[in-house]
Image (spheres, one colour):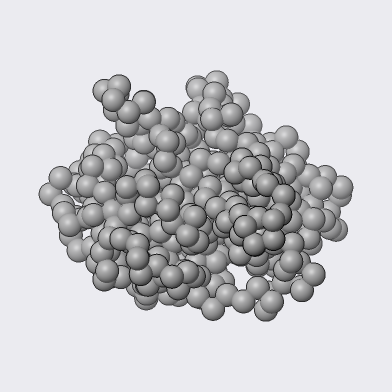
Length: 426
């Protein structure tokens, strides 16, 4: 298991890193697999996003009537037996099954069989954050009901993270690098960046991104303890990022897994790419109470610098969209300082899914790539115009600009993690 903190010294590129990176062609995304609250499967989800279809609703995975927050984004109609062989079901939990299903879709979309590649040429690098809660609760239930052997919380989470990524590797014969990054909502971008590093070392292909789910009583207690959940009861009004009425976020499950390939290897096999990863950076916020400013804007500026582009070159920003007034103001200010007030379209399609922890940023990355493919910016639904102290051009209805070639994706994770990634259209 790898945390973003383990690689903190290498995530924000210095000038020498940027120059060195120029020797490598940008890696390309050739496959996408999605499990989201408003659609299972990439095209089903993307069609729902363009329709503005909300996947947030009352919790059904457990009895939630006695909790102050009772809404969530649940992946609809998912039956693991419809997607995976029966032998895998006893060995996996819900989020691992979602990840296996999304990985299968991404590899099929890329039209590649990793088992046919040379040994150690393909790997799996994913992000996870809260999914271990459900596995841990299952272990506790076994302990309480059957007197099973005690497993510590740390052992449960560490084992879960390894299984989530390892099951994808085993199922698909991928013997290359295998790791999991843990930086909450920022993890979906951090994992893709780590995959890019492995491609630069000679790996040909990596399944990467994030998938998460913690819709269980133990996980819900942790979410409530964070003090950031919306207690709204109307699914269309509970999660309102950048709005003057914002009062917290809604938790969702799911995410996206991508096939990231070496550009030359993809061309060699005739693969069609959605786009390329052109730049990335990560920063860490100063400790609470230190008086230091948030550093999301620094991550964005560094990512543009690595990509070799100016702010004016960016056609759309996919926002982190925390749904809390202070955090929304900070993100809007970071965007306005970098691009100018109201100077670049900003969207947050996660208003249709809730925040997906480690799955959120990779789902935004998938949305960015599909936006560039189709020449359309998806809407931020239900929020209306942004608050006066959030001076951004928030896209609240579907938009088709004349130019849509470069997107910037932003993400923030609990604990001060910031990540930014630049993607180019094909």
